[in-house]
Image 1 (tube, rainbow, N blue to C red):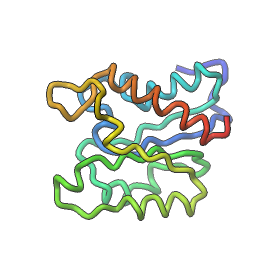
Image 2: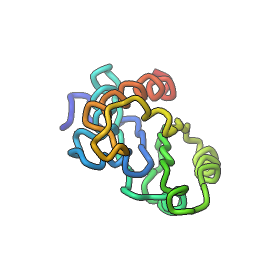
Image 3: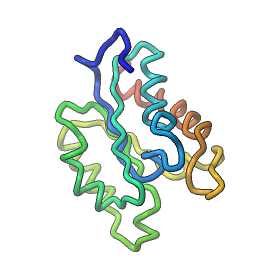
Length: 150
Protein backbone atom coordinates (compact mmCIF):
# COMPACT_ATOMS: atom_id res chain seq x y z
CA UNK A 1 0.00 0.00 0.00
CA UNK A 2 1.86 3.12 -1.20
CA UNK A 3 0.40 6.54 -0.74
CA UNK A 4 0.91 9.44 -3.09
CA UNK A 5 3.87 10.35 -0.89
CA UNK A 6 5.70 7.25 -2.10
CA UNK A 7 8.66 5.83 -0.22
CA UNK A 8 11.60 7.31 -2.11
CA UNK A 9 12.53 9.78 0.61
CA UNK A 10 10.52 8.32 3.46
CA UNK A 11 11.99 8.53 6.94
CA UNK A 12 12.71 5.04 8.23
CA UNK A 13 11.53 3.92 11.65
CA UNK A 14 12.36 0.42 12.88
CA UNK A 15 10.28 -1.30 15.56
CA UNK A 16 12.73 -3.69 17.24
CA UNK A 17 11.40 -6.14 19.79
CA UNK A 18 9.78 -9.45 20.57
CA UNK A 19 6.25 -10.82 20.18
CA UNK A 20 4.32 -7.65 21.03
CA UNK A 21 6.30 -5.85 18.35
CA UNK A 22 5.82 -8.70 15.86
CA UNK A 23 2.09 -8.72 16.62
CA UNK A 24 1.66 -12.27 17.88
CA UNK A 25 -1.90 -13.48 17.47
CA UNK A 26 -3.03 -10.77 15.03
CA UNK A 27 -2.61 -10.18 11.29
CA UNK A 28 0.52 -8.32 10.17
CA UNK A 29 -1.60 -5.27 9.28
CA UNK A 30 -2.92 -5.18 12.88
CA UNK A 31 0.52 -5.13 14.54
CA UNK A 32 1.45 -1.84 16.18
CA UNK A 33 4.23 -1.04 13.64
CA UNK A 34 1.80 -1.37 10.70
CA UNK A 35 -0.84 0.70 12.47
CA UNK A 36 1.78 3.28 13.49
CA UNK A 37 2.85 3.77 9.86
CA UNK A 38 -0.79 4.27 8.84
CA UNK A 39 -1.34 6.83 11.62
CA UNK A 40 1.83 8.77 10.80
CA UNK A 41 1.05 8.83 7.09
CA UNK A 42 -2.49 10.05 7.90
CA UNK A 43 -0.80 12.98 9.68
CA UNK A 44 1.04 13.76 6.44
CA UNK A 45 4.41 12.27 7.44
CA UNK A 46 6.36 10.42 4.76
CA UNK A 47 7.52 7.52 6.90
CA UNK A 48 8.13 3.81 6.56
CA UNK A 49 7.88 1.67 9.70
CA UNK A 50 9.75 -1.65 9.54
CA UNK A 51 8.53 -4.39 11.84
CA UNK A 52 11.66 -6.11 13.21
CA UNK A 53 9.81 -8.00 15.94
CA UNK A 54 10.51 -11.69 16.49
CA UNK A 55 8.34 -13.89 18.68
CA UNK A 56 10.23 -15.09 21.76
CA UNK A 57 13.28 -12.92 21.07
CA UNK A 58 15.67 -11.81 23.80
CA UNK A 59 17.70 -8.62 23.86
CA UNK A 60 20.70 -10.81 22.99
CA UNK A 61 18.91 -11.87 19.80
CA UNK A 62 17.98 -8.27 19.05
CA UNK A 63 21.58 -7.16 19.51
CA UNK A 64 22.85 -9.99 17.28
CA UNK A 65 20.54 -9.02 14.39
CA UNK A 66 20.70 -5.26 14.88
CA UNK A 67 22.93 -4.51 11.88
CA UNK A 68 20.77 -6.75 9.67
CA UNK A 69 17.37 -5.26 10.58
CA UNK A 70 18.23 -1.57 11.03
CA UNK A 71 19.11 -0.19 7.59
CA UNK A 72 21.59 2.63 7.09
CA UNK A 73 19.78 5.95 7.26
CA UNK A 74 17.25 4.82 9.86
CA UNK A 75 15.99 7.84 11.82
CA UNK A 76 14.31 6.22 14.83
CA UNK A 77 14.23 2.81 16.51
CA UNK A 78 11.39 1.91 18.85
CA UNK A 79 12.96 -0.61 21.24
CA UNK A 80 10.69 -3.06 23.07
CA UNK A 81 12.89 -5.40 25.12
CA UNK A 82 9.88 -7.37 26.42
CA UNK A 83 10.12 -9.95 29.16
CA UNK A 84 11.89 -12.83 27.43
CA UNK A 85 15.30 -12.12 29.02
CA UNK A 86 13.81 -12.61 32.47
CA UNK A 87 11.74 -15.60 31.41
CA UNK A 88 14.74 -17.29 29.74
CA UNK A 89 17.23 -16.18 32.43
CA UNK A 90 19.22 -14.33 29.74
CA UNK A 91 21.37 -11.24 30.16
CA UNK A 92 19.71 -7.86 29.51
CA UNK A 93 21.44 -6.35 26.48
CA UNK A 94 19.23 -3.24 26.36
CA UNK A 95 22.10 -0.85 27.27
CA UNK A 96 24.32 -2.35 24.55
CA UNK A 97 21.54 -1.97 21.96
CA UNK A 98 20.92 1.64 23.01
CA UNK A 99 24.64 2.40 22.86
CA UNK A 100 25.06 0.87 19.38
CA UNK A 101 22.04 2.77 18.02
CA UNK A 102 23.28 6.02 19.58
CA UNK A 103 26.69 5.52 17.97
CA UNK A 104 24.88 5.14 14.63
CA UNK A 105 23.13 8.49 15.22
CA UNK A 106 19.71 6.86 15.59
CA UNK A 107 17.15 8.19 18.06
CA UNK A 108 15.77 5.52 20.41
CA UNK A 109 12.24 5.47 21.79
CA UNK A 110 11.90 2.96 24.59
CA UNK A 111 8.74 0.88 24.72
CA UNK A 112 8.71 -0.56 28.24
CA UNK A 113 6.29 -3.33 29.17
CA UNK A 114 4.52 -0.82 31.41
CA UNK A 115 3.11 0.86 28.30
CA UNK A 116 1.16 -2.32 27.60
CA UNK A 117 -0.61 -2.35 30.97
CA UNK A 118 -4.24 -1.33 30.81
CA UNK A 119 -4.51 -2.02 27.08
CA UNK A 120 -6.79 -4.79 25.74
CA UNK A 121 -4.99 -8.15 25.80
CA UNK A 122 -5.65 -11.47 24.11
CA UNK A 123 -6.78 -14.34 26.38
CA UNK A 124 -3.12 -15.30 27.02
CA UNK A 125 -2.76 -12.08 29.03
CA UNK A 126 0.59 -11.35 27.33
CA UNK A 127 -0.21 -10.12 23.84
CA UNK A 128 -2.40 -7.25 22.75
CA UNK A 129 -5.57 -7.41 20.69
CA UNK A 130 -5.84 -5.44 17.43
CA UNK A 131 -7.49 -2.66 19.46
CA UNK A 132 -4.66 -2.80 22.00
CA UNK A 133 -2.05 -2.51 19.26
CA UNK A 134 -3.98 0.44 17.81
CA UNK A 135 -4.00 2.21 21.19
CA UNK A 136 -0.25 1.56 21.51
CA UNK A 137 0.38 2.94 18.01
CA UNK A 138 -1.61 6.06 18.93
CA UNK A 139 0.48 6.50 22.10
CA UNK A 140 3.72 6.16 20.12
CA UNK A 141 2.73 8.35 17.13
CA UNK A 142 3.43 11.63 18.92
CA UNK A 143 6.78 10.44 20.24
CA UNK A 144 7.86 9.22 16.82
CA UNK A 145 6.71 12.43 15.10
CA UNK A 146 8.65 14.47 17.69
CA UNK A 147 11.77 12.31 17.22
CA UNK A 148 11.52 12.90 13.47
CA UNK A 149 11.28 16.65 14.12
CA UNK A 150 7.72 16.89 12.78
